Figure 1: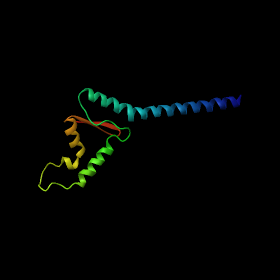
Figure 2: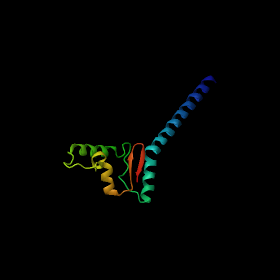
Figure 3: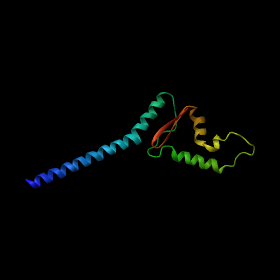
Figure 4: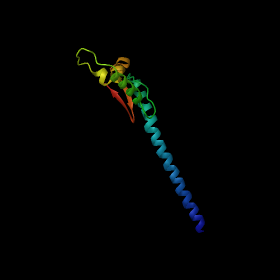
Length: 114
């Protein structure tokens, strides 16, 4: 009788551990994939466009590429207060592309710029 209770206990612990692992995985998938896609669709339905969501890294790679290119170009010879294309080239480009209301994604959230 003692060995069957040990087997039952160990199998119960294993089932609870697997269930906890599945629930944690479901939470991660929801937070990193399903929720951002849902929010992006809701914003698109309201007319707010933007670059598409990318799993895990969002638009971070695109933003870093744009910033690197902007920093490599020399500043204009005339003095100007128009520094947005240099400091945040991603916002400048996306406003030109998608309009003043846009959404962008940086992990783990989806942002809306108005």
